[in-house]
Image (tube, rainbow, N blue to C red; front, side, top):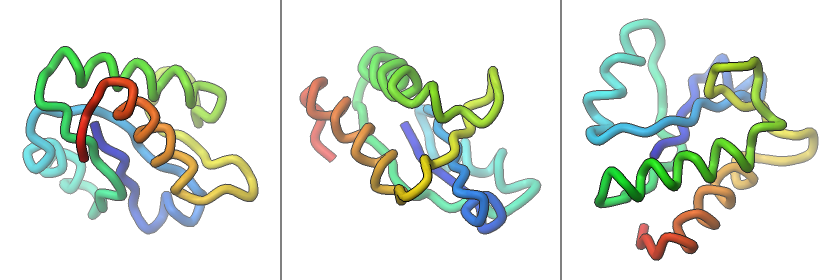
Length: 99
C-alpha cells in the first residue's frame, strides 16, 4: 500500500492511494508523466493482508475522494498528510503489520 503525490498535487492537498506488490515497478508507471514521490507505504507481506488494508483505507477515506472511481484524495481543511498516514497506521495495527 502506498501514499504518493507530485509537487502539483501537493499544492492542491491531493494524494494518490493504491497498492502494488512491487512499489518500484508501480512508480515507474506513474513517473512516465510526472515525478511522483512516496509519502508513505505499508509493507504488508501477504497479498491478502494488502487487499484488506487497501479496503480499510479506501473505505475510511471515501468521503475525501477527489472524484468517483479514482483513488485520489483531498485532505480536509486544516489537516496535513499525517491525517492520511494515521489511517494507514490504524489498519496496520489492526492487521498486526510492522512498518
